[in-house]
Image (cartoon, rainbow, N blue to C red; front, side, top):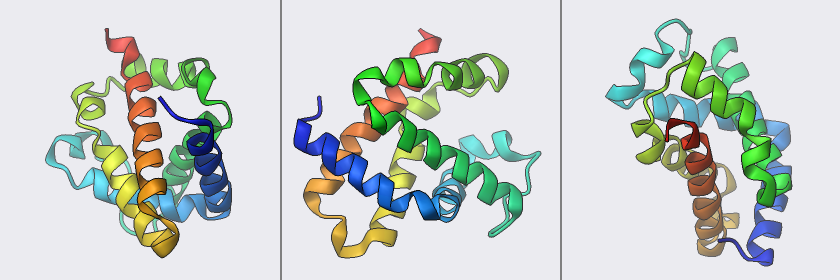
Length: 142
């Protein structure tokens, strides 16, 4: 799926972004929550720009993405608690994972934050990784 070079690129990129995880996650989450099919999941949260809840949840998302990138070969093991949470407790519609709405929102956010550093190679590698991340989250629905 990902070459050794792509895995290294993803890890390096995400490690640089960890200090601003809350901001990146919040930006991506705002875009994600704008999709009509996702609005119901956030009705109980204040996800207005710069709200503490938005920043906290955005940070959780980015840190989960970072954690998964530490050993991509163990992504299923790493994400097992999130799989259960999204499938059985939050009951997130698996269509949202298949449509990769959060993945697309994250890619746009990364492009905005990284600018020229988000090269076509970095974009392609991150797209592959986020696709795998979303696929693993959706596995509990099978």
